[in-house]
Image (cartoon, rainbow, N blue to C red):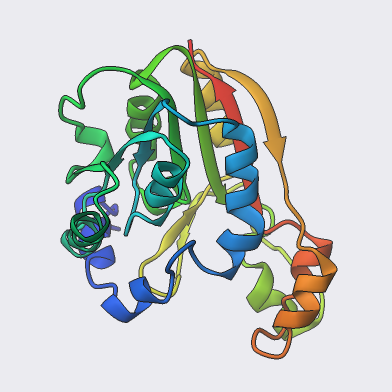
Length: 246
């Protein structure tokens, strides 16, 4: 009998991320987030000055800090001791007014009222019991508020490693749900329809889907240190969705 993964087990694995890995993602995430994810999220959010935003599953807090620097009133939720502690440390040093709360997204405490927007970036694929996490994000919105989430594109989530091996992209399993290895902890593959159908079931109205491609100039500059990065020019490794809450 196969033991089903749990959120608590996933949190324990993510808690082992080395501090050096967190410091390497300052100030705006890794290469992919800097070039592909962040620009789309910030464009979709628009002017955040004075808006109350929840960074759901904020990790070490880099995106919370980007939003606060743009004038947002930010609350960041993170379950792991390691990343929560790092985010708090940065807030003590910078005093940006970010409120960090240590909690599992599926068991949110009172966060002080509804949010104008909720961002859940690169979190849902890491959560075994992900539907309650998405529901909590939507329920945290004010009526008609904006919910953004990003995931590794379900059709191309292992793009870089496959491209390096074959010189193109190959996919054998898409419709199944399964676990696969990542650098620090596993992710869980789900077809795109799983995320979008749950979004609809929660009463959200899809506003935009983005599948960003890498600027060829950025790929040329990075190719020497990250072989295969040109694959990001041709195929989307990330999918970003914007929806209005009920």
